Structures are given as structure tokens and as C-alpha cells.
Amino acid sequence: MKVLVYLVVPVLIVAVWSTAMWARNRKPTSLQSGVDDFRREMNALSPDPLPDARRSAAGRPPSRPRGQGPGPSPAPRKAPPSAKGH
Image 1 (cartoon, rainbow, N blue to C red):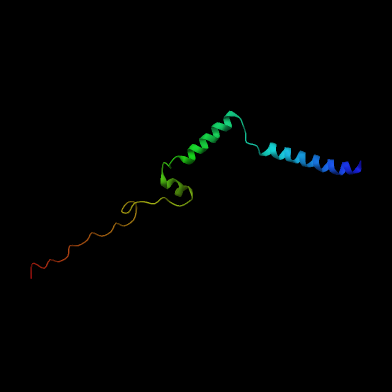
Image 2 (cartoon, rainbow, N blue to C red):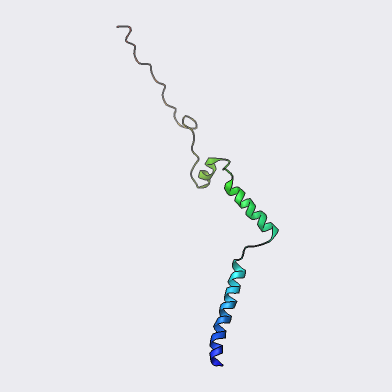
């Protein structure tokens, strides 16, 4: 009889533990959880509306095209001297 206790107790412990882990880790089955999963997948597949939005969210300023924004503008180019006059 004592041998049976040594076999039954661990089996019961494993059964209770595995049932608890199954109940804790199962996927939710409500309608709202299905809608949330679908919305999450659609957001992952959709393109970003502003490509610089991720960069500014990371703490870095978004990049500007050259020649725009504050700062000195480049000096205009001078025409090379022509060789016609000599």
C-alpha cells in the first residue's frame, strides 16, 4: 500500500501542475480577444504613415532634406572666368 502512495502522490502533483499551466497559458477565446488579435496583425502589416515618426519617438530628431531648415545656406557659385577675352 505504501508503494502505491509513492506512485499516486507524484502523479497527482504532476496532473495538478500541468492542468494549472495549461489553464494559465491557453489563448483567450472571447470575441474581443479575436478582434484585438486581428487589429494587432493589421497594424503589423500596414505601412508606417510617417517614416520619420519612429525616429523621433526614439529620441532623435527627424531628418530634414538638404537646404531646408535653420542654418547657413551655401554660398552661390561664381562663374569661372571665360577665356574669350584673351
